[in-house]
Image (cartoon, rainbow, N blue to C red; front, side):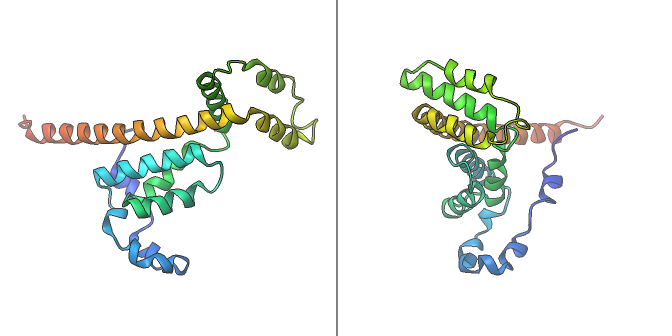
Length: 185
């Protein structure tokens, strides 16, 4: 099944709906900029990059940080908020493990084994009712490697997303133009 921008647009709240919200009334003037709501190449690329950046750099409140940053950088707000969903409860463990691994490699601390040993030896969640506390303690012990890895993923991910979005958008435009130029049989 091919991706359809028209089908995608149906799920995005309309500009008028958002402007009518009483919670957003202090930002009504800034929110009236059409670039924040249209699916335009550069605005979408900026929005996706902003969303990816905040998905990795902030563990909570990503939607709000991405939306506010998109507002001031004239990026598509909906795309910025949507892009933050790359980190979610399902992707959280592998993303944080990858970030820890990258951070350990960058700062020269290549001992990943102690963190993995704790994860393997941990009792199942149903048996150990204090699994949240023990998980947070292990996460705190990760410290500098984790923060370094998350910052690296945020910066590199946002750059790759921005460039990738522009390249894919241009490729799709070229494909459509070529299809229109092709004579009908």
